[in-house]
Amino acid sequence: MGKLEGRGLGVGGLPKYLDWRAQNHVFEDIAGSGWVSGFTMSGRQEPAPILGLPVTASFFRVFGVQTLYGRTFFEEEEKPGHDQVVVLSLATDSGNDTLIPIPKCLVRG
Image 1 (cartoon, rainbow, N blue to C red):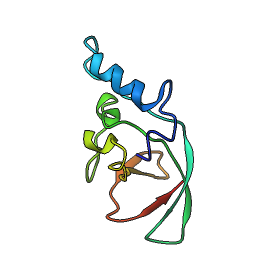
Image 2: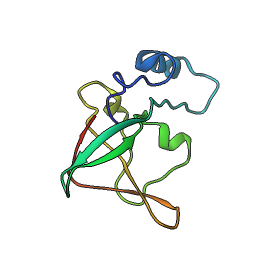
Image 3: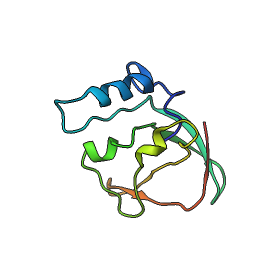
Image 4: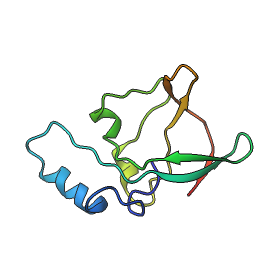
């Protein structure tokens, strides 16, 4: 997920998103995302550059995406200090992306 506060979260940032979510009476659910950023992932092999997109907990639910393993984000993980969680996608040669769990890794960015 990355830090939603420091990565933009689209128009208005995290505070604006939280306001929109609290005042929403029209849509079934809403989601937010920040800007694509470069990160470095380490922990299993040599450090590797990856692209990441900070998203809200509802992002996967809104777009109908389910994990093959593990889970996506809890709403508590949107809060500053509780946002040290990532969901990884493994791109295959066939073009299908698979969301995969890695028990422990370090992502810097």
